[in-house]
Length: 231
Image 1: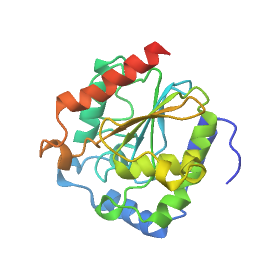
Image 2: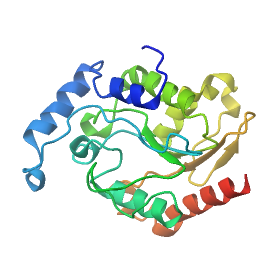
Image 3: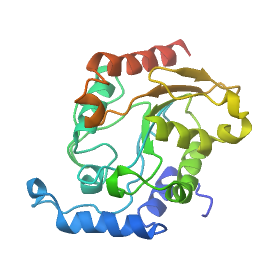
Image 4: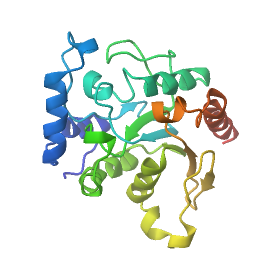
């Protein structure tokens, strides 16, 4: 992959990627077949680039685009219930201009926050293979290089937690026993000053079962805001 000089250039490369045949077939099939509720939509059906403020101090890392969310709208966490939870919290704590996100042209902007994911294409069963994550990892690595202001990373779910550790290099630099384990609300500061804050993903599986509540979800972003304000 070429060494991109800007986030915009990187995102142009992301949306044209066809490195994973299984994911290409799936994302395009979903875009053709559509869900009945979105039959009048022209689905995005391509890899989904990151979204937000290129000078952000807060980076949020998710798993992968949802089939009828970001794969439909073309923007991370846009058009599904996970996005409803995420943007509600980001708005509450001053990172988002509005509490909901429905499309790429809905006027939403992010301040001091950038959103990305471990994989850029919607996967069958919401589970990319490790080989697919590995092919996508250079994009996350490039984002980490270009987003020079990032000081705090919130990972949404155990897989995103692992993929950020790999892309950032800490997975290989740290002894196995010293790698930060995933747990909701767990916090770890690294020697370069970056702080990692872990959270359950706001998926229906977690929110509908009560594993993740509004209170425990908002606590993550309250802490994020406090950490950034404390410097």
